[in-house]
Image (cartoon, rainbow, N blue to C red):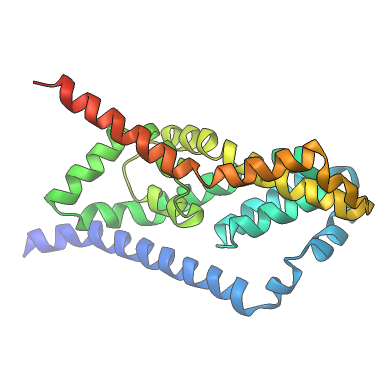
Length: 240
């Protein structure tokens, strides 16, 4: 009996935190899907808000993006809005910073509220995977980012594992660079052409390059998979 009472304080906080995490995720999804907030997630609405911010508009957008990531707003929507509002280059910087801030925040929420409970329920087999992720955290995160693993679920999910924060941070930062640049450059270039009405620019080198890199980005996951398989084969053959 004394053993049970000793365990109670350890289990209850973990379960309570996990319940808060689940409620937070459900509330975030409901807020975005069923509240008036979704009507403001447009270029026009956010453009008006950022106009009032003036010089601070890029910084305000970074925080909006970060909050959006934590609230399960699709990253592609936020990225497209950022590229449309700020163009291909400043848009890239704002989107990358916002994504990193939001990814870090979501990771810390998952770590703070769910890690203790996740650790208490994993069995021996899953524990080995957990330890493997911890020892190869940077490579694991980098790989999943390069193959376009769903962004927001991964942010919270990685917080439940033993991966170190800085491994996660740098793996994410490097892993999303290419995809973020490609998407913002493509959307930003098209928005500039549409805004100026100079449709002949669709035949320009820049527009063609933007389209080419956008199409090429879809082949990145396959290329990463091939490199990984080749690396695994070489690693296996080098071991007796």
